[in-house]
Each structure stands twice: as C-alpha cells, then as structure tokens.
Length: 78
Image (cartoon, rainbow, N blue to C red; front, side, top):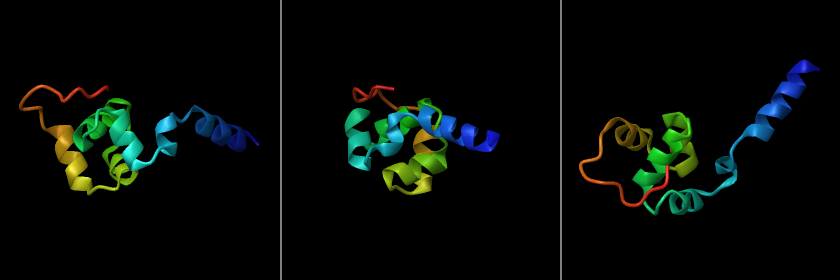
C-alpha cells in the first residue's frame, strides 16, 4: 500500500511539462528548441527525458546541455 501512495504522490508532484506537446514546450521556453532544452534541463530533467519530450535526437539534447552559449540567450525563460 505504501508503494501506491508513493506512486500517486510522484505523479501529483510532476510539473505540467509532462502533459505539454513538443510545440507547447518550445513556445513556453522561448520559441527555440535549444531554449526548451536548456529550460527543461534547468528544471532537473535528464537528457533522455528531454529528447523524448521534444521528439528530438538524444545527441541534440546532450550537445545543447553541455555546450555554453556562444552569445546571449534568445529570450528563453528557464
């Protein structure tokens, strides 16, 4: 019974990002895939989760998370 309560608590505490479409996520985080990747990573999501949520290659998500910005952000909200 404790396992069920823990599972329910985990799903209730999930941020709203899991229910959003890839297009909604991109729009929410500033309009670019890179800003969405950085925003989700800042919220604690793993690269594998981010790639699935945005329907992009794992390598794309990984590259964005490990590389520094060459210039300022494009208005992303992290």
